Length: 104
Image 1 (tube, rainbow, N blue to C red):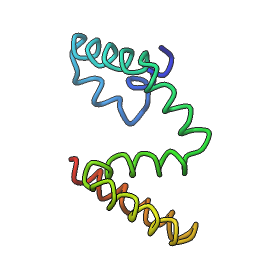
Image 2: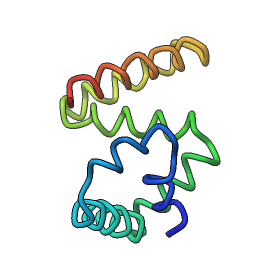
Image 3: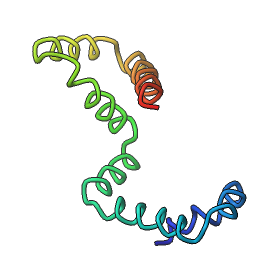
Image 4: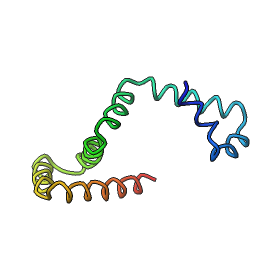
């Protein structure tokens, strides 16, 4: 519940909070509580804090997996591993931004 309070107490959200009705605030809080109560979501958050690079890789590859056949995906993974650590990390950041922008 403490993290949900941050939504309305931060200075940059003060104006937004002032414009929302109490019912809208309640809806936002219940949505966040329900989301945080899901085991898969809370585990993903913990994993992301523990190892953000690994979580970034999992997130990007999970989004890309449905776009490829099994053989193409295996080939794709081999190519990704051949980039090296720095190249792989740069590619993951680039693809994460690209996939998030497409989602918007």
